[in-house]
Length: 156
Image (cartoon, rainbow, N blue to C red):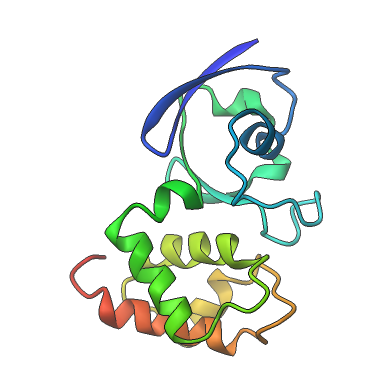
């Protein structure tokens, strides 16, 4: 079945099983490999993408739901000034270690800052609670969100 949607602001058409996961479509059909498969059950956040501006787990969504939608992966987000702000803040705060969770964390922080430019520590922790990180202990990621909020003042 042919399904059209916008991926990173570009119209794409995919001819695939409509029940195939959006994650498998992004990685296998469209070569967007920044989106990772972690648990495959919607628990770890490694497959996080923006779906019509909302943070979702791509492993839990069938491709059919993407018809006409606007999707953003790390590949697209890193081309934006706001995306670069979040990425640079994570680097500055040393919030990147093994890197496996990083794409999902970038998208989670971006989604938070889009709706709350000055989040509290608790709001940051709540926003990243769907993204598991086994390396950093989250403190550095929280620091990165604060840095992105400060350095991105006026962007959000």
